[in-house]
Length: 486
Ligand code: AMP
Image: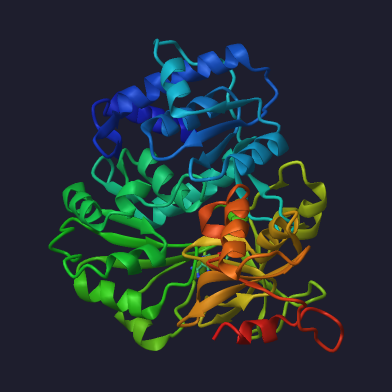
């Protein structure tokens, strides 16, 4: 029984159980399976059997789940795209991926309406299962291919470690489906007969509504970025009284501040707090650790944890050789959860991926160190940052700024608050001196950039300069620019 069969089995064992709840909509397992079979039959009839990806463009609608399963049941990987992405970025991704079809929730609803048995073809173990696009340093997003085997190795590990009670759990889905953190809640839930409880962008923007939904959710497993939990902790009423069934918090995607873990342990005495770490290229997460009082008292920053069984973490020096025990090195991951590479980009794949004793491996660009058998994060080697859990290549924002006719050159830096990126600042040299005050220029730059980049990648402030400060060897002096941010 593979992962898809496992999800399907809940359609027979618990057809009426909700597989997904979002706002006032609920989708049962019976419906999810029946409608994804129907969609798959339609896709198999209309698309050639060429494993080309199918793009799913929506937000937290139940049709997204039907679309994901429908695509893989027809032998096509899916690309989850969130409606908050600007049209032009969506169009670039769809073109780069060679997707023959972009499905919206409305299209899925129309296609999945009449019961039909599934087609004979579907995604095999080594085939691409989904493709998630992340920020690329040159201004083009890159598509990480995750095979069914990759996903299965991740989900099998999580099910064994967290042992969710079958048909009894409700998982928080905070991250958009285009961010691979959502894979943790989506597939832990669907394979254990759980309910995925999605909160949408509107609810997140409206705290009263958000806490009302959370209080009524029956959540047993909280999956989010640490930033989201930190935001929710502002509400004093967020505690075990509001979420009495909560068994565990699971975090991934960015640094978990000790202060956040401490507050959660105080407010939720019976609930476990887990930190997990990993890049999209190694299927959501590769290490994990339970943060209890003892770990909290002993380590700051907190550990990323122990590697999942069957996967190796190596720390490499610049020449690619392992560093001495206890030394800092670049984190590389080798195991069945590592992606075969970037879709249609053998050049990028060759740079970041390698094979170690016959096993696929990936260089993360993260600095790490082992202590007491656990991995610790020590920053980035390059200009990639995390902003409220979102992965951003500063070079991506810079390249998109430079592509604007108004701009000759641009540098983008994170503005730090308590040591963590809090927003972005752009320094630009204009192609021509423009009439009008700086705020008008900033507004114009922001509006033009917003047509290319998602909102979370837009700089909050823009400074127009005549020239950039230079280092002794003639590079832009980013440190000097950063000092001006105060
Ligand atoms: P993404 O591909 O969006 O999941 O981003 C992966 C990157 O996020 C990693 O390479 C790290 O730089 C960072 N990251 C992920 N999890 C953690 C964590 N638990 N602590 C610190 N950084 C993390």
